[in-house]
Image 1 (cartoon, rainbow, N blue to C red):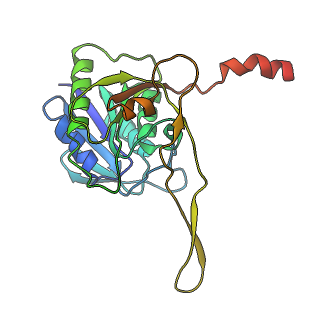
Image 2 (cartoon, rainbow, N blue to C red; image 1 turned 120 degrees about the horizontal axis):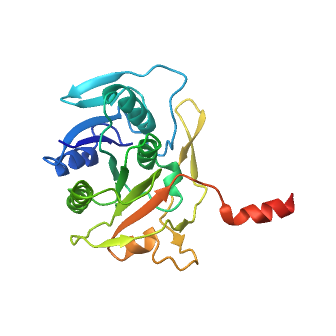
Image 3 (cartoon, one colour; image 1 turned 60 degrees about the vertical axis):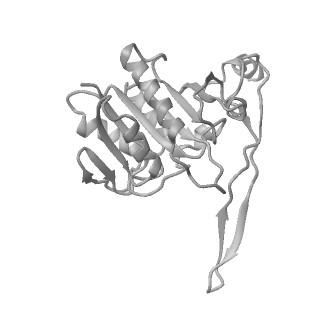
Length: 255
C-alpha cells in the first residue's frame, strides 16, 4: 500500500489537518507528524538549540513537541521512515492562503520544501479564507487533494527533482476547476500594533496584510491570486532554486 506523510503549520489539532486525513482515507497508509502548537509563518526553520520529542496522540499520529513543520518532516523521514521513504508528503490543509511571496514565510510550504529536499514528492495545500466568516468544512479542498493524490498514484508525480506543488483553494466555491499558475507579486504593508500590558510595558502585535497583488508581465498565464479571484483552484509548481539567472550577466558586468 502507498504511504503518505502528513504535516502542517497550524498544529496537530487543526480542523484543516483533520479534514486532510479524512480526504485521503483509503488511498494510502497515513502517518501524521504535526507541530504541537501553531507555527504559522515560521518559514523553513529547523530547531537546532533544544531537543525535540515525538508524542503519540493516536495510531500513526504524532505531535512534535514545540517543533516546526520542517522539523516534523525531517525527523519523521529519519526516524519513522528509516527503511523506506513515503510515496508522498502532504502539508495542510492550511487555514488561509499561501500565494505569491507568502510561500517564503509559510510553514505549510516549508514542510513540502523539506519533503522534496529529502527526495519525496510533496504537496502544500491551503484554503483561502474570509476570517470574518465561519471556517467551513473544507469540502472543495478535500475533493481537490483526493483527486490530485489519486492521479499521482495512478501515474506519476508531474514535477522535477526539488519541485513541489503549491495548491490554493478558493473561498465559497463548490465546483472544482483547476488553473496552473505562477506565484504573483504581493504587496506588503508594515502593520504592527503597539499596546501596553497592565504594568505599562510596551509590546507589539504584528498585523495581517490584505491580499493585494499584481500580475507579473511575462505572459505565463494567470498568477495564483488571479485564479483564486476567478473561483479556480490555483496549482503552482514551485522549485527551490532561488537563483536570479536573468540578473547574473548584469551582476558580472557590475563587478
